[in-house]
Length: 341
Image (tube, rainbow, N blue to C red; front, top):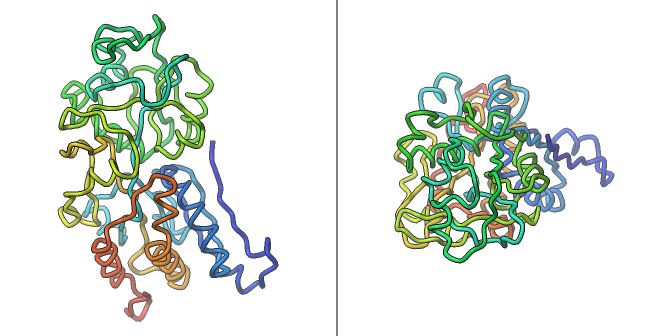
């Protein structure tokens, strides 16, 4: 399912000039809940709306390369060579966690425990039943059915898939060698859903299913989730504190465009499947005023959007990282070579 966030100036009777300033973007479904909240608040404060197509990271990358939007959004950061080749600036906006959403009768949120290796075995088709001895061994007296597991995966090019498969590649040599890390992979088993929205809907509808979604989607859709064993051997709850714990020791400068992985970080309370989400803009945009408006929106979100992010269990960027991003924006220039922000 594709979601389109359109907050138009016409909806509240603003002028044509204000409508022209509305911001266009497309891409990742992972941050759609927080972009929606930020856009609503920013609209009230500035009169500038946001038209954001929640179509997946692959679509966002295609659209920014085609120059049809002011910004593209992706959870799978582009590498330095790709950024240079396409003349793009990349920066993070917020952090969040991916959770295994489940639909098992009688199992409440946080009751089921899984390891990364077990999740890989499920998606490889090697663990087929919820009462498999390997799952039972982790879950003590939890009553699990003698039922086939129905894995759900993303059918579109997806940064959430990149995050999820990157995690599985870190914890399972079998997964790394057979499937690997990418925005789209050849899934051995399961059914596909489009977007975090589509996976959430499929898990909700299909009994004995498991899917991977951004945590806000699991909460909004009232889906149960499994706990996942972290690198320290603990099973923390997914929330803003465990996502922040995963990012606590991150070195944002170790990759061009801030494109680091926060998966499987050490830390007693670190959630093991954690990621930043990123925006892409052209370094020399054909319409600098549109990109300038987009950067003003992100700057507002950095200053005023932290609590809105926390309310949805996303994690704001550290203040020093926000400052590093603003410094990177100096590389976005108008035709005369003058920074637009």
